Image 1 (tube, rainbow, N blue to C red):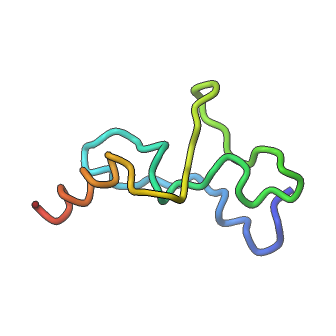
Image 2: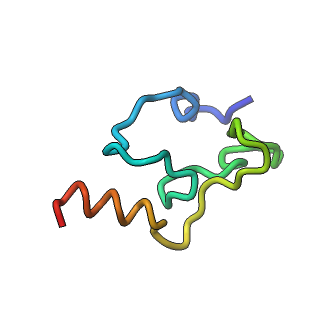
Length: 72
């Protein structure tokens, strides 16, 4: 069960990846148990054991996407 007012966070949405791979390690990606009320996973990947999300640094793909987006 998702917390009140957070249901939209769980909708699958298409995004523009700038023709680069999907970035599981992006600083913008939610971690597997973000929004969980009991610590259980709220997001799971189809790649067993794949870590997702972090909040400490831009990933290499974050940087590559920014450079592509701003043509630098």
